[in-house]
Image (cartoon, rainbow, N blue to C red):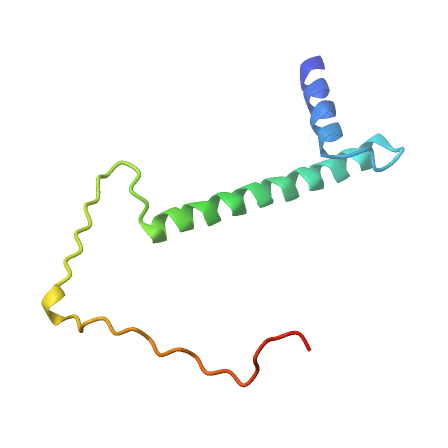
Length: 92
């Protein structure tokens, strides 16, 4: 029983300072803080899982992507015309 109280005491202190002088009230506040922390961790887990699932990161698979460009359909490269400016950009 001593170890459980000690573990709870350490967990409560890790969540923040004691919120009240009354031990029962401080334990309730520590439990609320624990629930909020667990909710944040679970939410972050699902966000990361969604990113991995939607983007199809190859975790255990080898994905091969092949890109083919037909150069015969591309137009010849043309040098762009020089830009015309109204100012000479000299010191005045």
